[in-house]
Image 1 (cartoon, rainbow, N blue to C red):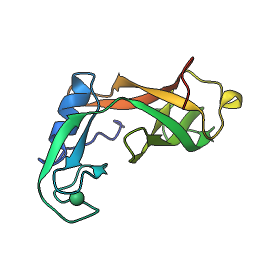
Image 2 (image 1 turned 180 degrees about the vertical axis):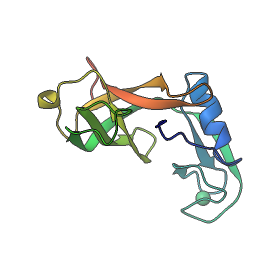
Image 3 (image 1 turned 90 degrees about the horizontal axis):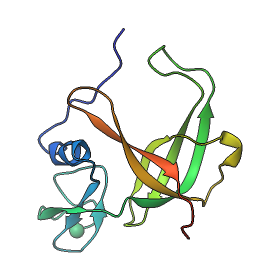
Image 4 (image 1 turned 30 degrees about the vertical axis):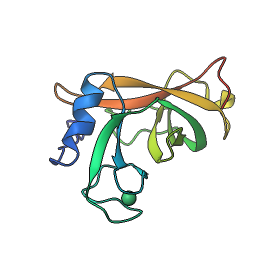
Length: 135
Ligand SMILES: [Zn+2]
């Protein structure tokens, strides 16, 4: 069994290209300045289609999280932590928190992005607890 791998659409490809370079990029609406995630063809605030990719800070805070103690397959060694991250730029992203003890987590804690290779062509964003950073 091989692990599931994203198959990016043309709309999503710039996001994955940036992750491959170790950068987080988010779409910004040129009309209303809304910041989007996940990648879309139209702004989810004003429906405009003039969107630009820009680098993001990689900073966020934990909105909520769950500890998965039984992995669904051997490709997902448990325990692991799935979290909703409120990015500094506004969007909420589902991701994973790595190198953290579950007991050390709570909503509102600051996190910083990192990247993990998932396959030859896919690198995914993950987050670590940030130290010495105020939310
Ligand atoms: Zn807009």
